[in-house]
Image (cartoon, rainbow, N blue to C red; front, side):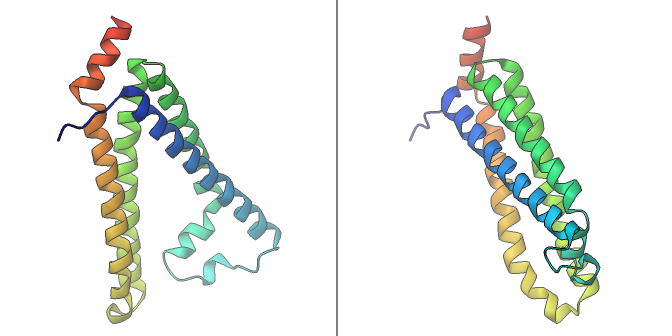
Length: 160
């Protein structure tokens, strides 16, 4: 079975992912403002790990996520216009995202094992590992697709 990859399909997928990441960052920003104003009765220091880290730094994480989503959209627009710089930017952002998901999954497991009793922390392994594995697999597939000769060839035809 031959996989038909085109630059436009790949770019549209990344534009949608970038928009999704940006909306998630905006939602997190709204939550951070509500927590800061006291509208939501949440005390980050009283939350269990790793939620205490996320809630305590929600503003920073949200702004970083908004910037990441915007960067993904801009790079994907470059790819959509068949600019080879867009492909390189998406590959770099994808490697960063893989690192982020591995760090986040590892930190979640480490902090839950450290803070809680091992017998109560083991249920976290089930939801964390498949989610991290799924995200890393999808991002790895994207790296593979961005490096395909058919994609490179399409970009070289336009730029060359």
